[in-house]
Amino acid sequence: MNIEAFFKLTYGLYVITAKDGDNLSGYIANTAFQVTAEPPQIAISCHKDNYSAKVIGKSKAFAISILEKDTDAGLIGTFGYSSSAETDKFKTVDYKIGTTGSPVILSNSIAFFECEVVDKFDMGTHFLFIGKVGAGELLDDAKDPLTYAYYRDIKKGLAPKNAPTYIDKDKINAEKSKTEKEEKEDFGPNFICPICAYVYEPDKGDETQGTVPGTAFSDLPEDWVCPICAAAKSEFISEN
Ligand code: FE
Picture 1 (cartoon, rainbow, N blue to C red):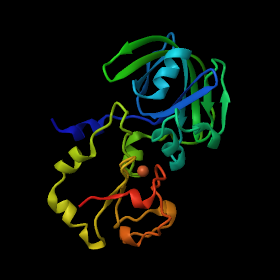
Picture 2: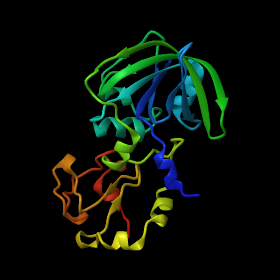
Picture 3: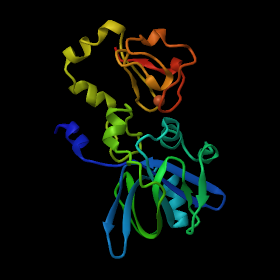
Picture 4: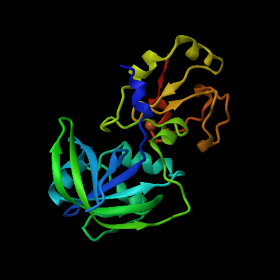
């Protein structure tokens, strides 16, 4: 099996949110899809280890915000690579409490749905929740949605470990040809973020923090951080 075939499946990127009492939870998902039109129902897949799985299970409701193409990497880092059990993910974003009681993320969102859980399937590592859409709004009709392919190829992000589409970075590298790696050695090795698997490629630099192409990892300023999850430079691991 060529695992890169999975990359040809197309997805968007969403923030799925829920609330149980005072506990707000939210995570980044690429698996959210409409399953029926009448009634309007949407399915989401949530890892059982995610704090959100417990919150959605209890509240029996969730909201889905569709992220815009130019979504802030910090929002993806906060909601994708940390746990709601330990981090107050909502303090840095705009949100409102919706009609089902679920928080709805408004920052970087072009549309949202509010859903009530009508069914739940145990898929082994994940729960598949089926939500009946009670409300849905368009927030910005002019902007394009962020696709998972764009996020992965242009923004250099990988699926968080609990995503249903997560693929081990080692497996991808094992399949890459050696020559492809050797061609890039001029500016030193690539460095990988151990938290989110973002890869710093010296020949590309990091335009989000003003680093020009051709900057070796060792020449990055000490206060440089992972553009996806904000991990410190010192935590990065050489690909060699
Ligand atoms: Fe990172």
